[in-house]
Amino acid sequence: MYTTSKDQQQDLSAMIWQSITRLDRYQQMKLLEFINSLFYNVEKKANKLLKYAGCITKEELVLMKTAITDCEKIDNNEW
Image (cartoon, rainbow, N blue to C red; front, top):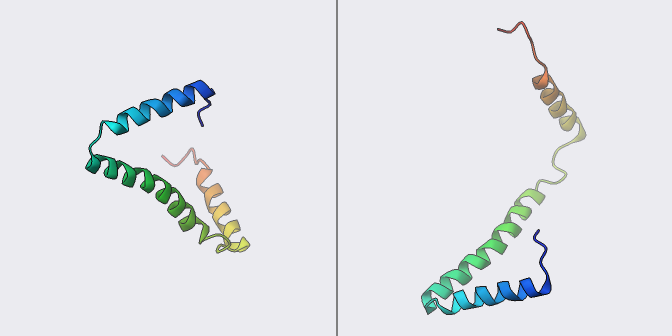
């Protein structure tokens, strides 16, 4: 996250507003759609992930951990 002072935030807001006012109506609507899509995608991704919360049993997690640990082992004589 970016930290900005109040003056920097006002400058940024002014620059954004100046840029928006140079766009025609169609471009402004497309910009609004894009901005809204940013929020939608964040919420949508979080919801997609949350629907799987609690679906994996502890036994399955142990199996996954074991499989990952086995993959981390190096056999120097393999080649």
